[in-house]
Length: 559
Ligand code: GLN
Image 1 (cartoon, helix red, strand yellow):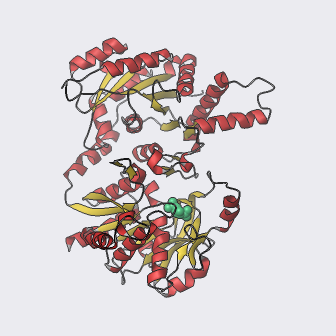
Image 2 (cartoon, rainbow, N blue to C red):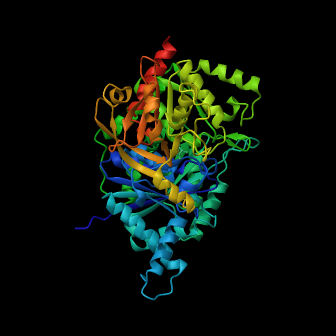
Image 3 (spheres, rainbow, N blue to C red):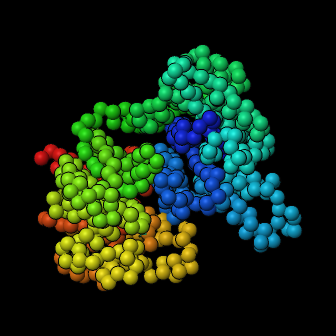
């Protein structure tokens, strides 16, 4: 018998940024610990076909899946909370949906019919949702519709959800994550914006089954009753979702409100307990609060500024990966974001003296990370930071661009090739230690930028006796996720190796350098990866390279 797959749509009310992604992840976690197979889908209302062409300060980090899909950072939250591997079926945008409908139309797949926004676009979305559910063989599919209710962009997705409910009443439910403000001049929690948001959702033909009331403080019974009455839901279905110290507490808090039981009931699923499965997560969420000893980690990047605000979202997977490894070692990291442009007068915003002073302040960190990036902005500053970390023996982890720039720095300052550079910054440079991957040349010539980098999971072989191999527990081969156009230029492998840079991870054909490190004799921890290990770090199984980096940082702190 075909199993009746269940679908939970999660929509946002009042304002964006209320934590729909964490809500989806938490609902998934709760149902998973009830023994159900869960998958999650993110729908972004943008016209971009994927997130790969968006600047991180616009849209946060671009997350990369095993299959190479460049998607929204929420996909990372789902993978981390659920400890599953998602595929491109689990992510869609307006652009992606329209693109495939248009392609089908061009291929005569609509049999001569007039192809219309409704029903053909919602039908395409339904087909994609069902495919993702089938591919994961899921009992429950949790679907996040991006944006907030009432905006123009996501109307077709709401229409899709309404149609799915119409066809399978018992198998589809709606959760609205809404914001309940406590204006400081009034000092009272106000439910009206949420009431309006629900009306708005009603006008799209959808009645929420559960309201998650996000607020700075927990909801009192009076507000719960009010929301229930005015929004047409049971009072037990108004869930209090106050701000919490840590996102890992969210599923735990939801379960305190018995959310799992409620969802099972609403989806007409037989009651089932968690059989101890949830306690693993509960223990994790609890014990990490006891860890002290801030290990000082600096993340030096350039995607931090958004108007007058600082955005750490651009590096969310890196931040999470650092935390998981620190927790694993019973420590708590203290993360500081540093803007690379402050470290160099050349191409940066600092004066020479200021930049020098900033650099010397790096001594107080126990570890430094230069994460992935693109383009020339802030590069000289990053190179200065890397040189400082290398010469002052501060544990250093370079991720993708952070590895490429470590190679450039090494070539400039150790091999004394003063104009060593990457082709990304100086395409016609004389000494390009980092050069474009040959097959990428054609793509760039044709301005084929979208989804065209070396993307997704590739294998690498580890070198005997290296730090990398030890960190990975002695395995011969690893699989890690990539997102890059440039690589270590094969011409420079020998000269760099002769001067002590160890290429400890290499593609199976021996062509691409995947990890560069310095011997433990020369530096306590100096390692860069061409891939992005952060995408595979999970709360309960931290990434071995981040853990090795954190061990070195803890050691430095202990000194
Ligand atoms: N810009 C570099 C490249 O394309 C590094 C990319 C990254 O850091 N993700 O190769």
